[in-house]
Image (cartoon, rainbow, N blue to C red; front, side):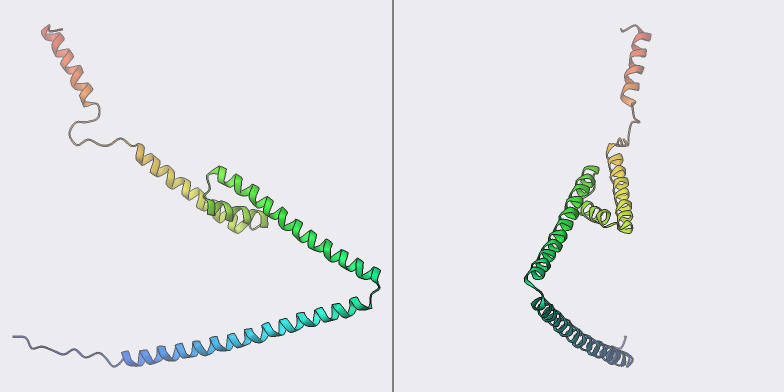
Length: 177
């Protein structure tokens, strides 16, 4: 008879857990530190933005009405130019996306490729083209496999016609036709 042995876990597992716990605690400290730093930087950025607005307002208050009107006009022109540039980019992306979709790209791939082309990001564009070529290859292989004739277990392909020809020859030979 075999004796029931009690298997004890090695003591090495306990130190590993404490080591992992130490690493987790260290990472948590780093995360807290990074969050505090981020919060400080965000508040500094907000303060600097507020100061910039105050300086801009002070500067504008020293300007004459004509100069203030000119500054407002320039700001409006800059806003219009930004909006126009954004609309042109969206239009370009839409045109490219339509062309990619007509080529057979998927919706996601067409959008990504159109944005990459509009932004001049060749790396993403080439990556997407490679993915599309792979997709075409896989689709072609799948279509080819669908059109393959099935292999019969018994008679070879065209066996029925061969039997008919043989039967006709035999009938002619025996004069039954």
